[in-house]
Length: 186
Image (cartoon, helix red, strand yellow):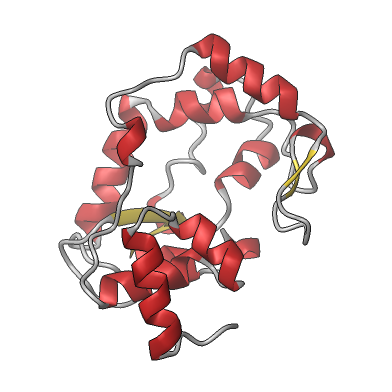
């Protein structure tokens, strides 16, 4: 892990303010985007959640599909292999369940379930204790593993799956603490 010195920190802040993204900076300096994000937040630098150039613009479904098809099975990323493969050739490929995940995660049942988790945890990060920041629900057992283990292939079967809506499998975390969870536990 690269430690952010005062000189490096000044450079990161300068580049971020001039338009570089946290992803771009993390690649350049060999650290996680979460580390960059935390450093900027610690130094009271406003975080851009949506690039200014994309605000108010939406890509058409045709453009999204075209980009997706052009990347399937291809290697993307920098010369050091930072990102890896996409589509079925990716090591974390889950069988193309994204459309079903999207249906579940945008359902009213999912929204109500998240609100129940947040309410149970008093809208407080259960790791660092912060309240009133961006909160996320972390699944102790991965969402994709629940889908796979219960052979959920339709929206209807997802709505009926008790394990998917089990409040004991979830915990409220702030965005920063959720970033800090190792990838294999997400």
